[in-house]
Length: 66
Image (cartoon, rainbow, N blue to C red; front, side, top):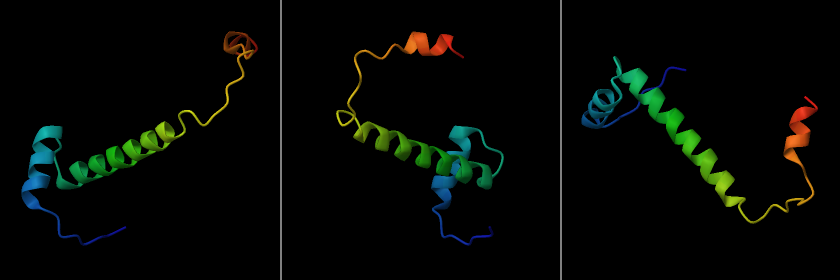
């Protein structure tokens, strides 16, 4: 999807350098992937303490069944 954005050039250049990306596109795409992944992890952390675990559940037994 072609997009025209006004992005801080110095920030993109620094991201390219830090990530050893050959192009601005690679740097921006990697940054967006990391941003999305970080927010997904944060959403999972928000579930902490909200899920009731079954103390009788045997995860090792579950693995053996395939």
